[in-house]
Amino acid sequence: MTTTTISASELAKLCAQREIDLIDVRSPAEFRSMHAKGARNIPLDVLDPQQLMQARNGTANETLYVICKSGSRGAKACEKFFAAGFDNVVNVEGGTEALRDAGCAVVRGKAMISLERQVRIVAWLIVLVASLLAMLVHPYFAGISALVGAGLAFAAITDSCAMGMMLAKMPWNQVKDESCCSAS
Image (cartoon, rainbow, N blue to C red):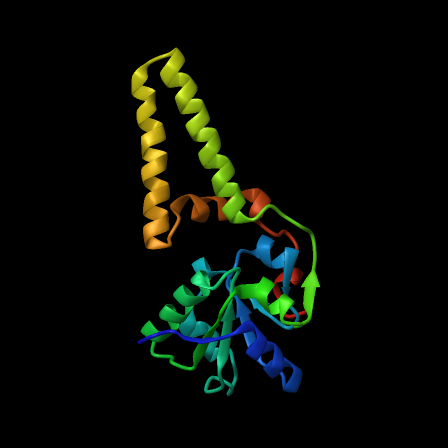
């Protein structure tokens, strides 16, 4: 089944007319930094479509809107719902920033470095250290840089980043106060 999408501007108009059910599938730290008002945080890696739909108490047949940073994690969340037999799920194109730019109310919290930037920083550090080791210790260390490059290419092709998933689980990307991860 193809993922149904809605533009951020269309969703902003819809939000102005009535209350909607919106889940944000980014990490808790990303959600804490900025999220759409009324959104609930359910990170993609812990998303259980069956459990979420059961918890909707009679509203399981109403449309569920899914948002992330840019739309790719939202699309993956929609695929999880479709695989579980739920087809009333819509992905928000452009993500949270596009929704904010469209005039939808957002809640701002503690800022953080985005996972995308964290991946670039870690990849750069690994390549830098491996290059120095290749020049100063042994040329075989250049293989580490090649592996990082191959990993980045694989991530770009598959739109799935193992390093990003690992970084999302790091302590600095966790939220100790879970009250930020509910609707606001």
